[in-house]
Length: 158
Image 1: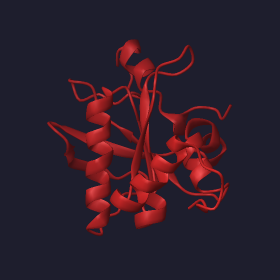
Image 2: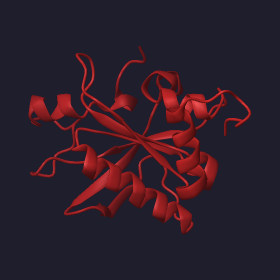
Image 3: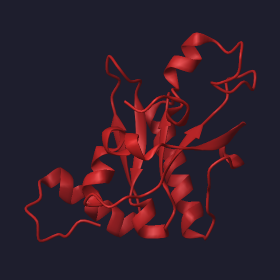
Image 4: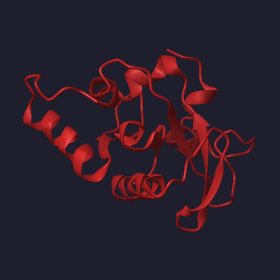
């Protein structure tokens, strides 16, 4: 994790303080022309050797709770890995974990990249199904659902 002797902005100091105190800091990224709103973790790798996580398409309060639940599980020794399916993290839905390509990490999780000082770290995307139980990659899933939850591991690196 980044050395505190660096000149830090108040926002950067808050990230590192949250990681020190809670094991994780959650970053909310507002929607843009290119990407839907999403949230991601900073500190899971440093605190628990658990891959950082990113989730698209959920309201930020729910995404924040989901990432904090993952931190709580990681603090108890639970680990999540690519292709894992997990019940109980998101009320009434299973979630799956998909690997995020290394080439996308710095662009999609810039504060995590900053905190880790350019050192590589793994990232998993938390993917959730629609109300009918379809995943974003399933045929027949609504285009709007697919667009609100792009699956980074199934896209070309940009």
